[in-house]
Image (cartoon, rainbow, N blue to C red):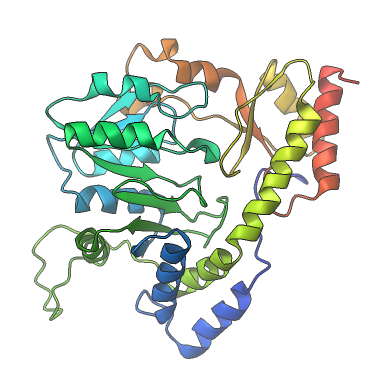
Length: 352
């Protein structure tokens, strides 16, 4: 179904076409093109990080980060219950085991429950900044220090949240705050980790390109054409974040007094505007009839077939999954369009 008011739409109004054209004209369209290095440098500088390693998706970014940290079979990685399944899949891809921790009231990992899940096999903690809300990184970094653990931040939904952990991983999928269509990037201050991730993403070729590969690696490279779009997006990131702050304020003001709607805590950066709704499925059907798209919250990892645990119904993550949704949230959403969405929600609940 095509919606007049979609949840997400990329805003390609900067120098994307200019940079893409330049890339095509100079012929450097592969991962070897200079545009990849330009994007890596620009995104790292924006985030005050020493190194950026671009790759093919947010999922591959997480996989590279874990592999670079030596995560493998027999290891455990602490992952939130409330997240997109790719966070856990990246752990599984390495042969390690994801260990899940329930969420708090802000949907982020409940830091007070991490320590009880740490064992002698725990190697990494993976906080996810859900919908743009920054996790309690001070507490997480303190725990990591006490137990000699590494921290991989899943920042797929949080461009503009500055890195704190050993490696931060961002998605550049088309629905993210900034995009390259498909793509991702890892940020770190450790040159050895950066070199290892770059090595692993490019099939672990030796320097002489002899086709002797000493480890299992990946083709997780980003093309220069994707990097051209990502670079143009990065140049506008401050403006994009400011526009999205305005969208958040408008929803907050327009929905604050609606019976049946529970607003969620503020976001450090706005990826998606999330809320809890009574009679959620009826509301979604009503909004769809007005050509307004909505999306459901993530389901708990322990409800996923590959990670199934029978206790999933008791999780706080499941309570949120039962009545949560998010609304159209994209940079090109106009005030008039947003007012229409707000008006239709108010009409559904009979709010004057």
